[in-house]
Amino acid sequence: MSEALDIGDVTAASGLPASTLHVWERRGLLEPAGRVGRRRQYDANVLDRIAIIVTLQGSGFTLGEIVELLAAGAFDDDKQVLHEKLEVLVEQRRILDRAIDGIQHAIACPGPSPLDCDGFRQHLEGALPVAKRPKLSGPNR
Image (tube, rainbow, N blue to C red):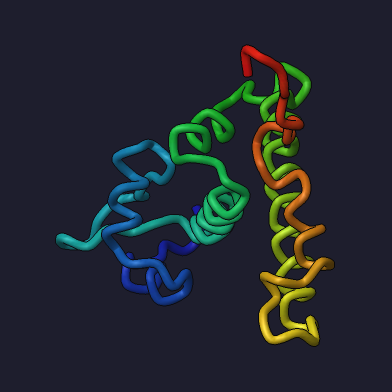
C-alpha cells in the first residue's frame, strides 16, 4: 500500500473542504483507507480520483451519474452515456456562443443603444424556442 494521506493533507492538496469528501464517501465515490484517531486516512491515489470526480462534475455530470460512470462495467454500452453528455454540452456551447456573439456585437455597436441596432436585432433571430410564425390573416384569425 502506498503512503496514506491524512484528510487535512487531502483537503489542502485538492482545495476541497472535508465536508465535500464526506459527502462523496457517503455516495460511494471515495473510500478512506482507515483512520488515525478520529481522522480519516486516504490512499495516495485519492487525489487522482478526486480530479476525475471534479472533471466529471465540471462536464455536467451529477454525483449519481458519476457513481455510475466510475462503477465497473460502466462503459459496456459503447460509452453511450458519454455520447449523450457530449450532445448536451455541444448544445450548451452553441447557446453560449450565440450569447457571446450578441454581447460582443452590442459592445461594438456604434449607436446609443444596441437594442435599436439592426445588427443586434439579427442576433435575436432564432432565439425563441419555436420559430416565429407570420401573423395569419383572415376572418377566423
